[in-house]
Length: 340
Image (cartoon, rainbow, N blue to C red; front, side, top):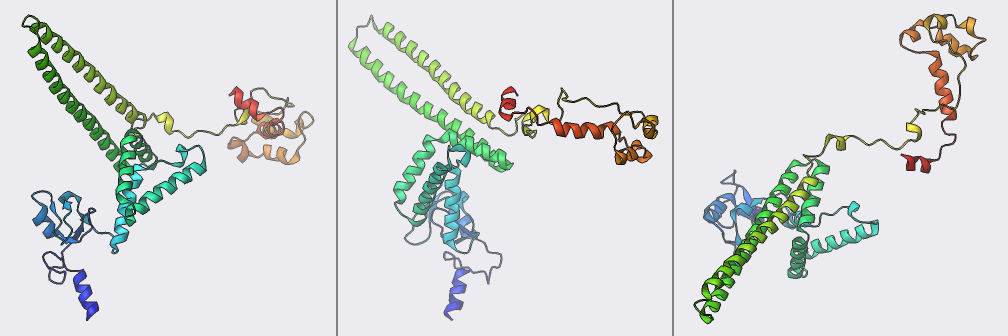
């Protein structure tokens, strides 16, 4: 009886007390803020008008409707760990090629695992969250670059679009921050202007106002240039790592280094004996045996009309054999790399 009661409680919404037995199409949702299970109807009813506290007793965390999602794993602890890993991996997204040695990369991975462990198990959670937020704020552009680079490697267009959106949000954040700073500066300048006017003569008032307006105009122009430089830097970093604007040449596979341009050495180290090249001479190869190389097997092939019709010729056999014999003589790889 206890097992049946637990099974029924598992399939029942703790808010409206509706279970799947009466509503087979009922869907449960969870929010990463607290991971409490709520049915979709209760989510629509409680959070449609905006953020609201979690209806679970003694929780009280403010939840938003757009943060709710379907539960993938039956074990809520696994669900929470997967979400934490996704969030942290999007912030600490360096790869092995970003480090000079494997040991430093392993230390970086160990650091990331410690962060995930602390957040998942509630060990120094506030301090760990502060460290994560600090790292994200200090490495915002680098994180965006790595995200775009990974999207290019994995051909993951969804991640690429997310990187573009984050880049857009970063531009808006910089712009809003500068606007707030400008408003504070204007208030400060207005107060200073009032202080100067109250303590100055009437004759100097116009000059003080003109000077103040000139300073404000110069600062406005400077701030516009500063904003353009910041946005231009972000655009350059984006274009540099944008997989959709790469040249077609970059997509071509790079051939490995081979000396002498592969097997095509321009200056031959040997001279061939006269070898028949015309079809008529090849068919009559026996009468030219004294003038060229003696190889009964190859000479027999040279008279085969099927071989000749396919483009096979006797001189290519001997050229290839001699090329392979002489190719490595006088070849020093390091010198060849310096020349190339």
